[in-house]
Amino acid sequence: ATNTLHSGVRHYLNPARSLPTAAHRFYPVAQTSCHETTATTTSSSQPKYSSTLSHPPSYFTATTSSSTIKSTTPTNLQQHSTLQSQRQFTTAYQGTPSDGKHNSHLLTHLVPYQSTLKDGRRVEVDFFRHSSPNDISPNGSMEEEEDEWFAGLALMNLIIREGRSWPFEEEFENVDDWRGYFLSHTAFVVRALDNGMDSAGRNSSSQGEVLGCFYIKPNFPGRCSHICNGGFITAPRFRGLGVGRLMGNVFLRAARDLGYKSSYFNLVFKSNVGSVKLWDSLRFQRVSTLENAARLEGLEEGELDTAYGYRYDLEKLPEDYLGIGPAPHRN
Image (cartoon, rainbow, N blue to C red; front, side, top):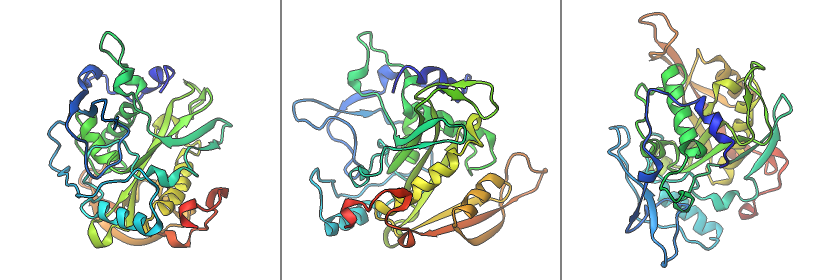
């Protein structure tokens, strides 16, 4: 990440909540998680690093499988076996803190994906950028606001405080708790490539600023792990510019190329009109209706919102969706 992120992330952060200093985020460990691909050093001549793990909330009971990811390019059969074994103990609300680059080698043809928003601003969909231990300055500090992990954490907590589109009530207290939820598998940011204004035409945004983020991971464990889930956040300042639609389109192509057979969104709240319109327009199927599902902000006292379940059959997605040729591993 670049220094241009410094001012942008301030718009997401809660001034009343302090984040741990970067100097205390890393420490040498004997081994990394056995079922996640990480961006940490793997050379035997250098120590591996991992973020300090705090005790997670009760809804993050993390479990892992015993399989490992090989550095070589696997065959189709090996890819299927690896994907299945690594998903079997995970669900939409469980995971091990990682870097959001699980099976990223299957998306080299797609990511980064560049596009243009409604206002003409160029953006790219890419994996989260994170400052490595080598980026720590000689005085032992590292700007948290230049790190996209912290931008993602801040956006997540902002949406939780809004209380209108996600089921959580309690904010994530640190970046590692958030990583266990958002970065356990494969996750992306929408990053500005140009300077521009926000959706109200007032506050300027900077090149490199995070406009939104989303993840792809299994919705269910074991025999149903081929069904994925997605979570999407558009920074409130940039709603209405097409960020959500861009994320939805890239989600479809990336999820299919990662090996998932279908996608199912558990809780799309009826009062979240923008989200309902988006998934309808992208031809997701509304397959379930759950009444009295959520206590959301903005509703009358005692009122409970309805939630819809949306499904997409990824096996029907064109191989060249988004105008990009078939993934090499699918040939």
